[in-house]
Image (tube, rainbow, N blue to C red; front, side, top):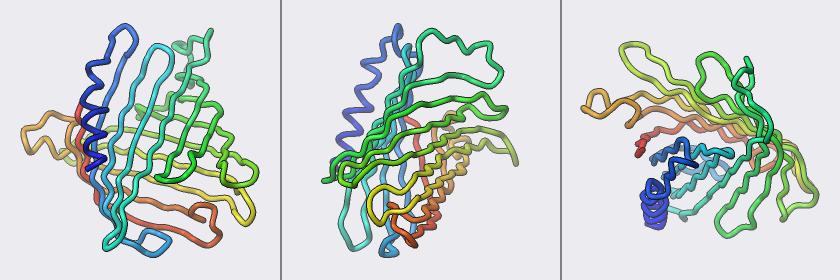
Amino acid sequence: MRLLLISLIFFGCSPLFANESFIRFHSANVQALYGEGFEPGDDDKHIFTGEYFQANRVGDLFFFIDSSKVRGGDSGFYSELSPRLSLPGFDWNNSKYIKNVLLALNIEKPEGLTPRRLYGFGVDLKLPGFQVFNTHLYQRDDPTLKGNTFQFTLVWKATFSGFGAYWLAEGFADLAGGEGPGRVSHQLVVPRLLLDVGQWLNISRGRLFAGVEYSYWHNKFGLDGVTESVPQLQLKWVMF
């Protein structure tokens, strides 16, 4: 219920603040996912996600919040806020490979825990077939752990047609070093393959998707030997 209220307030009010002189593009979606075998504990989990993205005159902003429910167990919330600021004085319109270079900040907030901070640079690339192919190099700092480390993050999105249908392939990957005593480097890779099912329901293209998200997390949370490999069913509704 809390996620629903936050999503309605945040996403529902967003168009009211869509000042065309500042905001160039924005979009919001909600997702429902189910998977089995999450670690630690090999749990089954329902996840409801709300996402918002905005591109504006100075950079962009991405925000999401997850509400998860373990079967027979507790529920929890997790959110991330990722603002990025384009470096001034550069025009990449004529670049063959680079779309933008940005200062990047990411704040991770698990429910009830101290936020984790990541700061560094992002380079958005122009690659054939991809609407989005963004790379980031961060310094990662978890205040609850001693020291800090690096994180490389990749985000991608591509749409294509095939087999008489419209498809969406997207996802992200996080590769991070070990941080704190006893922690090791860890890698999280989350690809999605979604089918636009709205075409059979008289819904506009690009609004309703169904498919699979796969989560592979080697040494989850930096814990040596804890590896998660979970396919999830996903339903995604693009609100605007």
